[in-house]
Image (cartoon, rainbow over all chains, first blue to last red):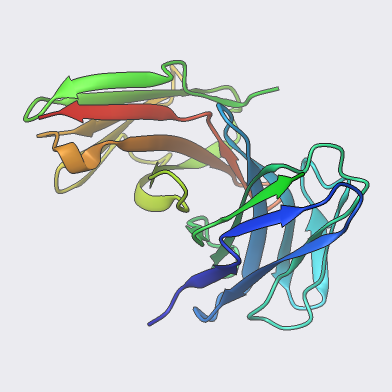
Length: 112
Length: 113
């Protein structure tokens, strides 16, 4: 059963701590993406990766970091430098440069 | 600067009637457009797409219309069903530049039984 999994679904973090959000896909997709959604706003791109060991900053990369050591995995670290980390985080993937992206279920991060 | 705009934050429609969701864009380099449906606390689900070489694409109850001269697209749902109640996002893709989508802010559709 192919798809994208994100864990955990809900995550709480104390201010000043780094936290890593998991994203795994078994669709054999080359490209993976991280988005952030805030209330009343559209999805904003944080980082994306088109191939293993390569990734690019999106529109709001400050305070975030990623790695792409395996094709299936694209973890996102929310660092203490991110000023407003409380949000709903979505991971997506696509076949190569195909334009249709498929999304995981999301992780809601709350900073206490 | 919002390149994809959905000016109606919400829309209510009676079950069985037509739902029309609208989307405007500003970037003439966009050549592919998508609609996603999103339930609360879930990821968006791809619904339907259209290439800029077409002006209409239909899939069952869902039809997307593209008016390139007006930089406008719309999603028609006929007939609307209560299960269609969700937030709908319009997204656009440019043939050049980064391989990423630009999303609108979404329209919350409520289908009233």
